[in-house]
Length: 127
Image (cartoon, rainbow, N blue to C red; front, side):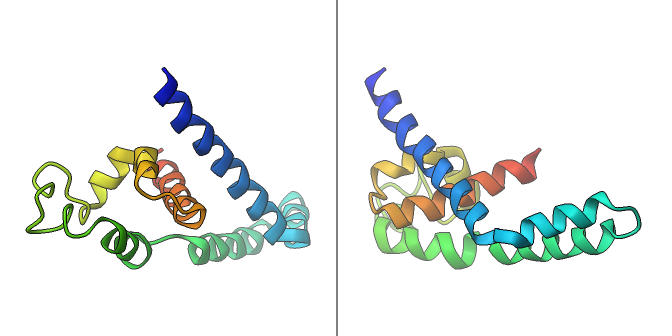
């Protein structure tokens, strides 16, 4: 039970930080988009702009997560490593399945935040 709490508390904290950061970075742009969405006839341009922003903020597995894992988890979890057969970290599905359990190895707050955002967007696209 204690391990569960240790993993759950940092995950909740990171989620809160990510939400606050997104709110702060959108500033008045988010309010303006909401105002446009409320008025008829202008919803499409507001959605298009927010879609572009969402795509720009998106964390790609190949360009952001894989290099981070190669730096922190090589050679064991990459081809030729002793743990590769059980937990291959070069496969996106492995990272999605492990989720926040990777925080035991990725201890830097910046690394945890990047992985946390990646996992959140993975869950959002799965829905």
